Amino acid sequence: MAKVFGIVGYSGSGKTTLTEQLIAHFAVAGLSVNAIKHSHHDLELEPPSKDSARFRSAGAGEVLVASPYRYAIVHELRGGAEPTLAEQVARLTPADLTLVEGFKREAIPKLEVWRAATGKPPLYPTDADIVAIASDALLETALPVLDLNNITAIATFIADHLKLTDHADR
Image (cartoon, rainbow, N blue to C red; front, side, top):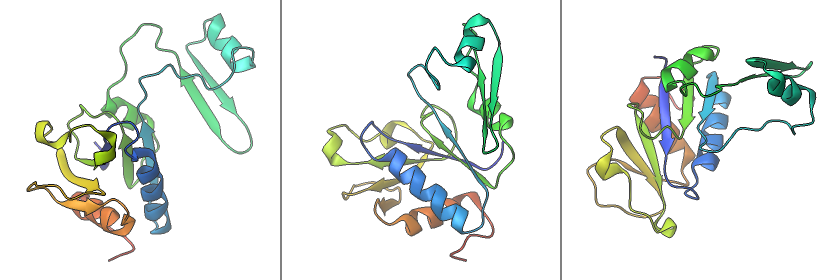
């Protein structure tokens, strides 16, 4: 699989904000970056009255919506199995790095975003694929604990862990 790195944690921990900041950091550093976001909710990109939603309701297996600025493909599973993370990554244009938010059960290297304020226990004691923690608190662990507010340090850790080249801090 391509160079894939996961960002995991509980809702409200700051995963999306961190992922967004990491994407910007790596893009400025000259790396091509893809992102995959896993959701447990139904994915509705357009209201049911819009054309593409109507095509899907009529039975289209996939609908591609295109404009001069971007395109999106919506694939209906229609009761089929959810594709694996590897299958999802394979659908993307190759990139230097694919950041994955969610998919916490996948066997990929992951950074846990943990805040005491969530009131939830850390995930790292029960997930051997978590290789570091980004937090606003001190934790007693053998894993590296990175300052959640230090994007450069977190990006450097990820780049070193994945052996990415062309990282701006090199």
